[in-house]
Length: 115
Length: 115
Image (cartoon, rainbow over the protein chains, first blue to last red):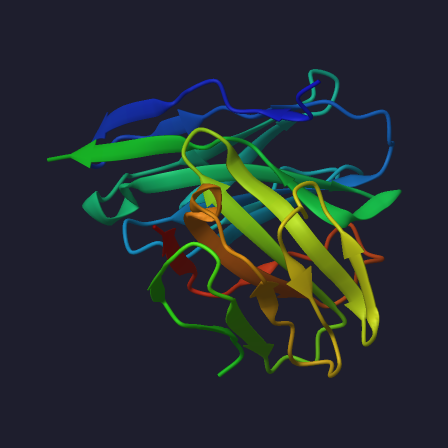
């Protein structure tokens, strides 16, 4: 069974608009961490934002925020005021407390920002 | 500058010719890992290491070897590469395996083609 799912293979957004990238996960571990990474066309993996399962507030980092809905097991990334440089692949990943040897990745969403 | 350094960035080789991809981190991280990235499959873990002289298999270890003789280095060895090992490879490290909130820091990737 898929542990982490990104259902949107591709998304388009106009510059300066906000966009939400979906991510759902499956775990019975009460303690876990959720991560989002950006992969531009140059190939490197850039860490964007982290959300802990016990965090009371949704994580924010600049224009990135995480819409964390624990009961629904979703951790959607919201990018506000999109910029052309946001065009990239975005990966959701998580790590369980009782299986911290592995960061499990989704299959990614390709975001295209157009002028 | 804190970083994970992989070499080479690009590698083209022939079936059966042994190769090594080097990985080094300067952050004194205990945990290191290798992933491969293939279209539609996201990132899959090959091997990981929790500390010096401690390595273990990930999800797709067949055809690969690793070693961890020093804390900073974690080379990936392909003893007899085959075309199905053509992929984008990432080395990553994090402060500790025991923390679910510890993000992975990635190298810039090695694009391997086996003909």
